[in-house]
Image 1 (tube, rainbow, N blue to C red):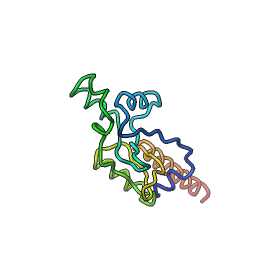
Image 2: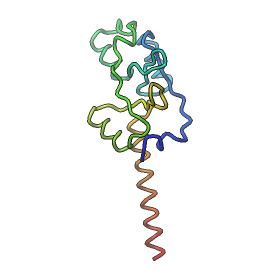
Image 3: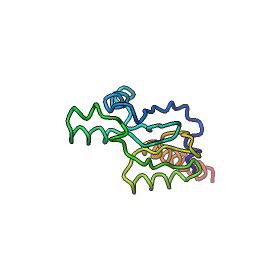
Image 4: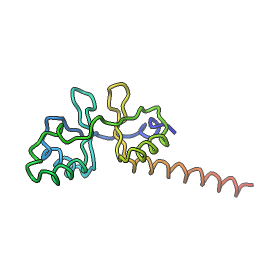
Length: 142
């Protein structure tokens, strides 16, 4: 199953920030939208990822003064991205191997979606449950 299939009917508004936004502003967006990470967009391209971990690490290191720094100074860069044609299992393996929980889905330079490990696990479970139901129906009809 491709990532394109996972995101095909998604009506997701992708919350983003820019490299020049303050950490305070970006952290506020994460809290307000109740999300764990967001792509950092610079001139229409994914420049990095800003996550709860980035906030935690910079505040632990520098205290409250870190909140006035630019996102560009604390974001995770370069962003690890995935093409929509890639297999969802490949994406899950990539996320596990790289110890990340979010992937921008990018075609060329265009951001199409932002998927989490939870999105992929949910999709995988739904697929397995559907296959199990088909097997149960097949067995009962035999």
